[in-house]
Image (cartoon, rainbow, N blue to C red; front, side, top):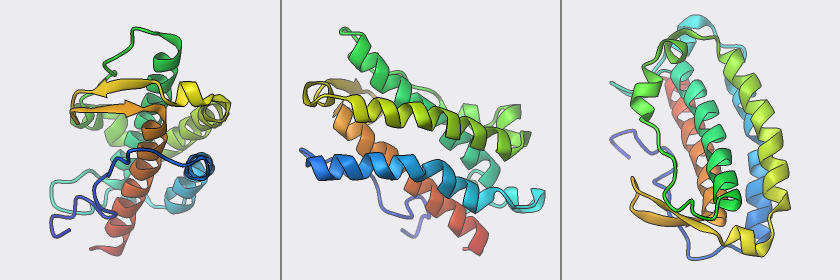
Length: 174
């Protein structure tokens, strides 16, 4: 981890997940907004501009990114369930999005609110999925992997914890 990219290590896709693991993922997803709010709500403008490594995103950009991607995970899962021909997932250019004016200067409170709002829907949706729906897959062209809905829940948890690690590094000045 000397490159400071992966505070919790890279995402490792499993062959399958137990019912207990899936319940745990949904429970963790349910706490993501409060975890981010606890980390960043009281930070000063100066602290929000801290980075976890040279040439990385700022804490502000990370918070906006997590809100964007959390919505994207929810969108992908709903598309996979509702659109039988949805086989290749929707991608965004994360670096381009993080360089847009709203990501560079908007208050993090707006993304915390967005994260809280979409999270309520995401959790309700995830809890409603049947075993058959959890096994619906789509192709992730950037990762060159097929993802099931179970994998989508696992990566949502990993992604949030990954960026929580980045924020902690930035705040510690590591």
